[in-house]
Length: 352
Image (cartoon, rainbow, N blue to C red; front, side, top):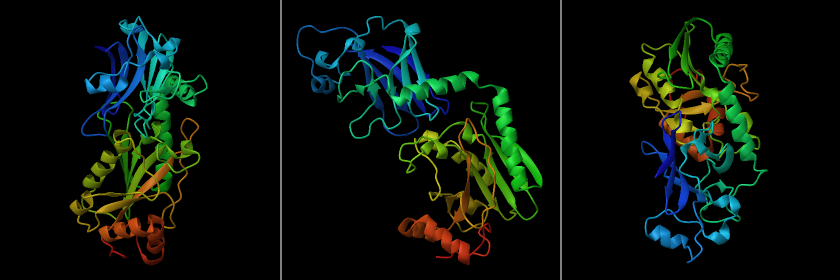
């Protein structure tokens, strides 16, 4: 029995709250071959006074497991569960985490790292760490995070977007000035997103406009303060080519990647880019770069009190990508800085 259901904005996952076997579970259903299904125990719906509950036995029968009574506190039993008005599902801005509220209070959270090392999420109804859920205590920082994100969503308006959009375009115009165009890339969905294009005469520049409204998933980030690295815009720059559309389409396609795959982009990452071949280049990868001698300095506007980084997608050859994997992208960039006359030339020779 489905109690509540909510698809995220990127339309890559659906959260489902489901009742079965005297228990309520939250499921995170991936779309389009994304990572595996995740589940989290929310509560039992009645007390079983007689007989012993066995998690493994329920799973062997294909049932969602009933939480043994010795692991439950008073919050672990919800009788009025069929009233849909009591439930609310909230996707995190990272599009991978979910909070469950009952009668206006958050009672469970499935963070983005759910499913790692036997951990699936937090629930207020469990007393200790179990295979089905860990305790959700009042001082859990995830609660405050979801409350703040809800405030942001409720306060967001068209003027929020227009102000941020104008600030981003102003930063890009200061970086490269010339004939410019703007393309909507959000297909009418929230959050709004666009592609800025500029031709200065000797450089074609493209950048996303709006990615930074959503923080990227932070799991796996190597930074001590990931909040300062989670908001980005992507950019590409090259010498003039006959048709920039394949690269613009590639840029647009990568603009939802972090949320679709529960990942993030960072300085030094590399990724295949077959569209480079479509415009006549022999390069077939890009390296994500935010610091290099050959990059122009750019002053990016902040958003919601967080820094916004501009990550350039630098075209590189397959041999250079292998070198980056073996030695590090930073070592590759040092060679490019010292030996490559024009890193933005799509038709340059490979340097390694």
